[in-house]
Length: 248
Image (cartoon, rainbow, N blue to C red; front, side):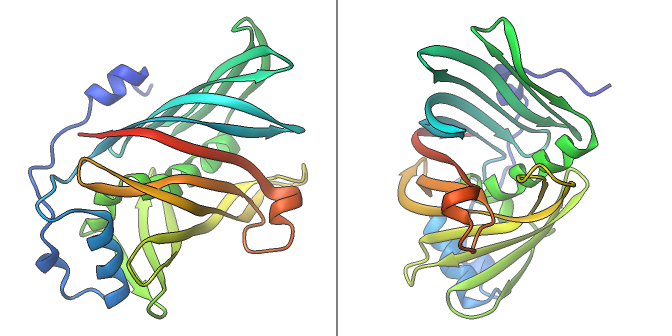
């Protein structure tokens, strides 16, 4: 059985990498990759293995409803997103998680009555896709020797890596400054209620800020059918603003 984590214990499990970011170490990478990494991570910043985020926003459950959340990403183990959303003035409390290869979601009205409970292989695979794309909030993990980079041109790049047993093909588009514009990958799911499959999934970055030497997206729109005309009317379901980020 995987270890049981809370937000606190997951955060406390983070181990220092003992490394710092030196741009010269990436001089062999394509120019677009260097521009992205040098924009996202300050020189001599400690390589973090975990980030703790405070956020608020809206999530679409038939209609858009507000939420407030805290999230911990610990690359060694996974992530927990713990939130409260309000529907018709009533709180829905719960969490999504992927930890040591096991995905799960539990949401309860008033913290008592189940409204959304999920587990199993499909939930796990989809949750791993979420962890993969949310590496944009922990860009230090994209500096590892196990990450393969390609650049199609000066604005489009791809990071290939494996996490939680699943291979990611994570595509970024960037501004000339290196600022992230979009992130996209195939994510396992069934947004239309049909069979489970890989569906284009991604985020549009509308704002960024810097915390502890890391410049990350802080206002973004996220959803399925990314890059198609179905994104806004059907696929977009998550809009978030990051209020604070702490790295360890």
